[in-house]
Length: 61
Image (spheres, rainbow, N blue to C red):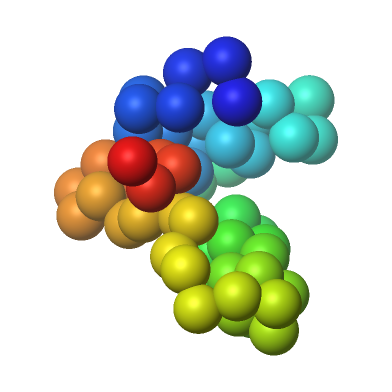
């Protein structure tokens, strides 16, 4: 939330959320993002999380 326009890589998100070293291709972050999007969609039609292909994810502007 401090950097709403910054795109965060899966590695960034993993290390910030779990305080562990990211070990490569892991679906953990993608699954959690998917779950967050589903929960948000149950309350609104707005998209709050954008996928930035080749980089990661960011909050929608």
